[in-house]
Length: 274
Image (tube, rainbow, N blue to C red; front, side, top):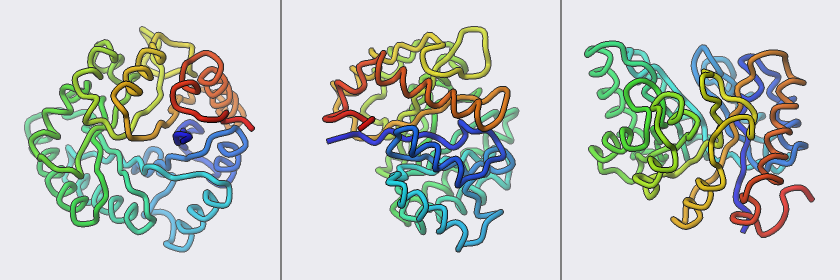
């Protein structure tokens, strides 16, 4: 069965025409979209900006374009008191829109007070996720939990089927200065979502696939061997330019994925481009 390979709306920058973005993702060959709902950053599918009717219209538009919605990305500042309520609100949004996964992260925790706020916020969020039957995923990255091993220490404390790992090899390389393949081997059974993101040494942004040093062939092979149950989602940083630059980044990355990696052979019964 064909795996879902989504494109994150963040690939198109902070301020986007979401309908234009959805059209481009679909025509570029993806069969999924990961909506960003990150306050004051990539707040694309935002319960703070759009009405319930408008939010539903975006979801319906994705459906009309045959785009599955595997996850809502909701990185909220859990190191601040307002972060927990923002995340809980987005878990509720995901449940109301039949989105089963919500991705969040620890970000930058500057002091002990921020760390306490983060852990308390997680308790509130996991409780909400369990009640609404939405799986909350803590993503690798940030100063405190940059690797899969670091994230697993947090998820293991909760012992919840509704709190697992979102793995991002680009973040592991950038923030954790670690080899994503060795790190993933330690936590692969707890990974329920995978961001396909490259890393260029010495750079703090993530280029189109193939412009960095992430060994995607090895990572995909490990995931296949481990019977990875989740989906994949492309993330590329838009550093300059607007929509057309983003379109080039996305299509270049997708072409690289299909032509230069083992993804299609391992995870597709048929071609993504038909």
